[in-house]
Amino acid sequence: MILVDEDHICSDKKTLVEKVGKLPSEKSVYSMCQIFNALQCTTRLKIMFLLLQGGMCVKGMENALGISQSAISHSLKNLRQLDLVRVRKEGRFAVYYLADEHVELFISMCREHVEETK
Image (cartoon, rainbow, N blue to C red; front, top):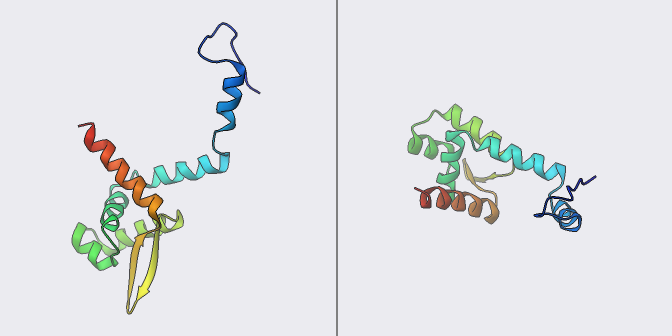
C-alpha cells in the first residue's frame, strides 16, 4: 500500500506507484546487500582490484598483498559464494578471475567515484 500525503507537492500517487514498480525485488535487494557487506572487507576489495587486472593464483595474491594464504583463501570463498569471482584450473594452479564484465564495471566505477570526489 502506498500512502500519499495530499499536501506534499513533490509526489503524486501515480508517480509513486511508477517508482515503487521499478524497485528491485526483495531477493535482489538482499543479494545486493550481501555484496556490499562482502566488499566492506579491505582484503576482499584489494583482491577484487588485483583481479580487475587479470586472473591470479592464490600465491600471486599472497605475494602482491602480503596477506596470508589462509586469509586470501577465506576471502576468495566469500567472493565465489556471491559469484563475484570464479576459478579455473590451469595445469596445477587454480586461477581466480572476476566473474563477468558487470563485476569489472562495478569495481571500476566505484574506484572512479571515490577518486573523483577527493
